[in-house]
Image (cartoon, rainbow, N blue to C red):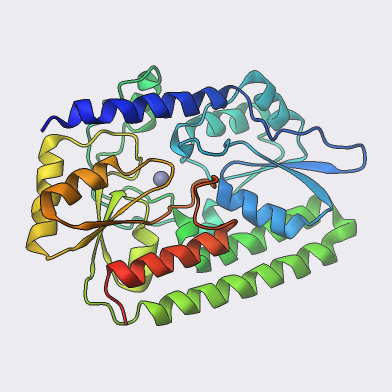
Length: 323
Ligand SMILES: [Zn+2]
């Protein structure tokens, strides 16, 4: 079987999606009375929208359905970064956004990574970054240090406790740019933090007794989740999903799946399921969806972070045989 040819349709779809990178459709001009807060990726958009309520305009830099690791910004969007009142982002995840913040918003931006307490979750990596599209050059820079075994995992939002810590930071930051509404921000944040605490408790209870500890995913986004709830993540591709896995890596994961008696492997909404399907055909495993929540689309199993995380919990409960 030739995996390279199998992936061509996926790349075509991805490129269609990437045309949306040219301009962010949900970039709306702030009305005269509201300040504008720009967020880099869906989980931060969810937090900021929840905390801001009606008081602020919140603009996301990652268009719906685009692989967020790969996002590009139009001059118009970079202008939005420059003219906004605050940019909330997670550094070292999206190169284009790091650059825009550094050049346009160094005096009005906040990097949440400190509050998120990023760590290395020991994700396994595939170092083949032959992407095969026109953005290849940038990936050389973006991932040049990915060979390090202690690479920090950027997917902090898959841990509800880290989401809660970042929610508190966002509340504090919004209160600083808009002190008149600080009480609302604080109470909105407290309500969200309570929901995140409940979610964390439900994950802990639901995943306390699972027959299968090996968690086979397409891209290694679930390190924090695995660490929290007692799984061992095996990502077919690395922390950044765009790399096409080598035939050797596919064979390696297929062997792990067979040896460990893994009968469920997980695919993603935005990236599609070709990689998971390939291993499933080889091993007879079932494919379920585990959403890394890097974006929300019409195909997402829920209308917001909390709902999609509950769908993830359902998938894990079934796929890891938890009781
Ligand atoms: Zn990712």
